[in-house]
Image (cartoon, rainbow, N blue to C red; front, side, top):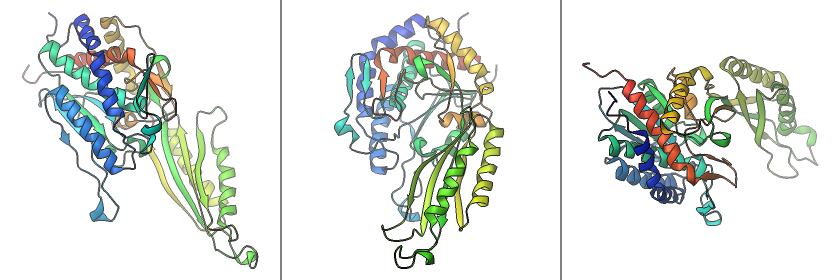
Length: 402
């Protein structure tokens, strides 16, 4: 006998397809609420838009998660916490849907890049990374209720700081991943709509050197040039990466000095590191620290370190199997899957041992780029894939008392 909590695939896909215009309107509303990670006021406004949208679609208000420290701690305005919708029976382990509403785009980007649709492409800051995925996830759950009359056991978690390493949202993601059966991550798809079965690990470092200032013309030998010392370190960092590009060590931003005629007293560089597996990540962390200690001649400090372990393919094996089943039921072509270099909160989910599949969000491209886009014609089918996977996972779960 068919499980009544699993929707009829044809009806479900038709329901979502008929709501394509509504999904597009919701996407415009969310993209038009700018949300750079560094702007608490903008994040709060975007969160309000998302909260109202989710409440309308899911029929209940979310839990608003606690803010960060803020003025009382001397750290400036508090970063707003994320949102959590807990649906279905509370005594069953949920399926975790994960996303974030912060973006890398500074406030004001919308004035020169407003939300537009050109042919089949929606354009605008954050449309692919990852506001379209949030819209798809909300509509997927709303249509499950409409077609089956019940909510699956789901935790829909949206964080506010993924783009800056999830200092606030990361512990919440980890907590809910541990409590969940499977994590489905609504980040944008890989090329041609492929799901993401693996991600590299991410480490980042803040390396600073302290020298001594002096007049560059009158007393240059009295100074200790922090910039020159740090430059030696930066040149040597390149050799830590692997020749095949599997492990990358990339200095990204740097600063030094105060005026044109002063020996720089301070110098600083940020370094981005991507590693294919946990062993390589740990080895590189040790090697980088050893290199700085061996190369720098002036006092130095190293901040940062390992932020996210890799999402390794073994964690995606079962969700991939289920994704194939869901595509077959819906009559959708299999999009394939890929390993990618970028990271997400999916890395944190996999680190708990929870089965995790990423890249279930929008089909599109250009994440963090001016040409960022999402394919509006595929919003319904991707929502259907997420919803069908959620329903199948929920149907497989043991029911208390049975």
